[in-house]
Image 1 (cartoon, rainbow, N blue to C red):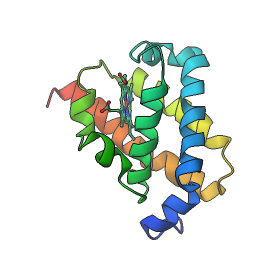
Image 2 (image 1 turned 30 degrees about the vertical axis):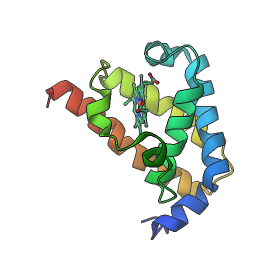
Image 3 (image 1 turned 120 degrees about the horizontal axis):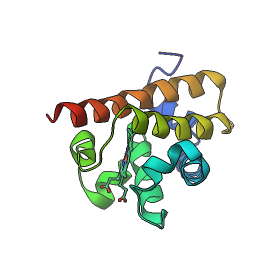
Image 4 (image 1 turned 180 degrees about the horizontal axis):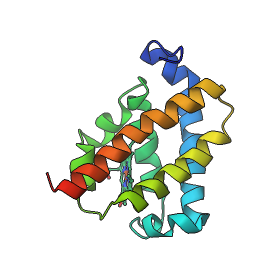
Length: 135
Ligand code: HEM
């Protein structure tokens, strides 16, 4: 468990809402600038205000914090939602690259950085798989 035995530890380790907001800001800045991410940037709207808020709220819940996404937008099935976009390995890797670099510049413990990257790989890969299988 990398020392992150319970979900409250995770939310604190991520810096709570303020820390997760900074992480997601850096993530979308990377998506705006990395050449590898052009393919996924094009799938997003011109202005990233709403995607930023949605991912921030979603990650709060993933990390054991308040369920802000559900409170504001209702429930979501992540793979199902992403089925509308052509997400193959290249797109998954572009998303993970933006996230990897965003995580790297946060003031997090090294062990939490590792944990978070591995944790987010799981839904990213699931999205790709469901998309590919058409299930
Ligand atoms: C695998 C690569 C991924 C790609 C290419 C991708 C792409 C996208 C795109 C294009 C949108 C729509 C943005 C908009 O129109 O506002 C979106 C929304 C979203 N994504 Fe992803 N995504 C990926 C992985 C993930 C992962 C791993 C998570 C969570 C850990 C995630 C969470 C979300 C959330 C919460 C939304 C907002 C849903 C809504 O509008 O109701 N995505 N994503």
